[in-house]
Length: 275
Image (cartoon, rainbow, N blue to C red; front, side, top):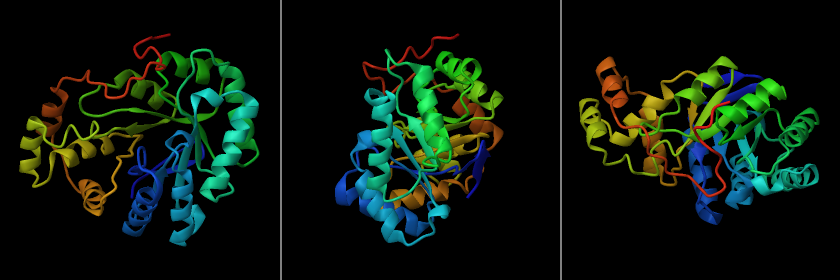
C-alpha cells in the first residue's frame, strides 16, 4: 500500500470510511477490512461508532503501530475544555492511547481558530495525537491556520471526487506539504452507474466506481476513504489500485462537469471564499 508521509504522518492512501455505519455493522466492516489488508480507518466522534471501531481494532490483534486511525472533534466542541473531553472520550472508545491523526471535523462560524488550534497542538505535544489536521477548510481558512497562525497541520479532509473540482485546495495543500483526504470519493455511490466512467471502466475490465477511485489515488498527496461495508466493495476498492489509467482516460475525466457537491450542511463554510 502506498503511503503518504509528511509532518510525522504515515497514512495509507486507501482507507476505510465509516460514516453512517453503527454498532455490529461497523465493527464487522472494520474487522473485515483489516483482515483484507486495510491499515487506515477513519472515524469521528459525530459518527457515534468509535466504540465499534475500537472493538474491531482490539479484536484484530495487529500491532497498534501498523494501523492508522483518524478521528475528529465535532464543531460544537472546539473550546479547549470541550475539545479535551472529546479527545479523552474518543481514546477511551477506541481503546487506544493515541490516534494517528486528530482533526477538527468542521469549522464553526463563531470559533476562536487560534484557540482551537492551540488546543490541537497541545494534544499533539502530549502524545495523544501523532499528527493534527482539519476537515472542510477552504483555502481562506487554511491560509489563516497555516500561514498566519502557523499551526503544524498535516492534512485537510474534504469532499473530493471526479464531479467536484478541488484544485485550489489541492494546490494550497501541496505547496504546504499537506495531504488531502478525499471523503465521498464515489460521490455517495452516484458514480457507480456513471456513463462516461463506465466507458473507461469497460476498457479496463473494471467498474465506474473503481475508475473514480483510481483517479484520486493517482494524485500525489491524495488519500481516499470510501465507505465500504460489504466484503465485495472492500475488495473492489483494493483492486482499483491495480488499474493503470492513460492520458485519454484522464482527459475524459477532466472534461466532466465538476461542480456537484454532495455534502453541504447549513453550518458549512463559504467554499469558494479566497483570502
